Image (tube, rainbow, N blue to C red; front, side, top):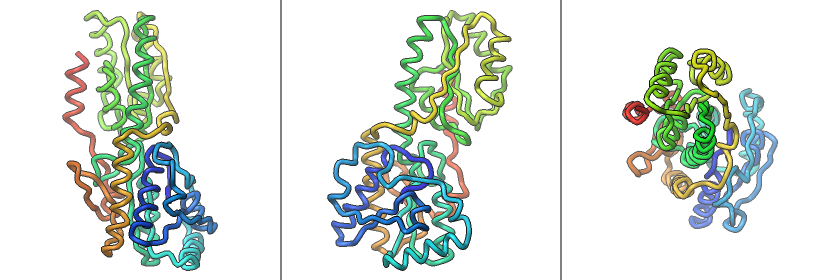
Length: 318
């Protein structure tokens, strides 16, 4: 099942799991709407043909939903009854830390083997250098920034571009470097409004007629990007300041080759490790090798921001 926010590449992972099951002569069910479907007995059979022509599609054919009922013991008891009804032997959960937390609790209470696959564009899960969907989201942001820069340059404007990342700045940092942003604001590095103003003044003095500032939605410089932009207007009246919030376009779109291949590798591996008797783990990728982490470690930890990338962004913004 897929759970939490959708991420490009989830369909490629669903396809890989279904086809690996068929290859190993196992029966595969898809659970619709995440934990909600688990409680409401919304199951479908997934054979190799049921997942044809989905590797290139964004979103998830199994749908996804938040489920308050699964947070209760009564809700999880209903889910367990459905698991027994369909004679299901293991669960593969594709999602973020909230989704994996639900799987860990379910495994503890009922003993069903669970394997987690990280699927989140925020890339904020410990135990993997990349989560499914992150690469596509970053590429989507880069394409948007490239287009906005054309307008910024044409009209000598300063653009604040807000990207997703409430608790982690991976999208902002990587997309900002790749798109040549003059400044990048992320939750992990509280730069402060004074330093931002200093940087923008220096850029103006050195001949920059337009600038791009990429802001992760969780950045603490101001309470929101619009108020941040307003303060810059007041402090630097020479700039024509605009705001662009990219929002949910970052979640959609056809997955990149990287996300398709990563999702396929993780999907197949999830079936294979269950056949080996392993469970209560999350699959990650480190140095191009698939690795396993206990679910509790993946959930409790957060992927650290790459400090060398922060250093590189400062050098490139001169």
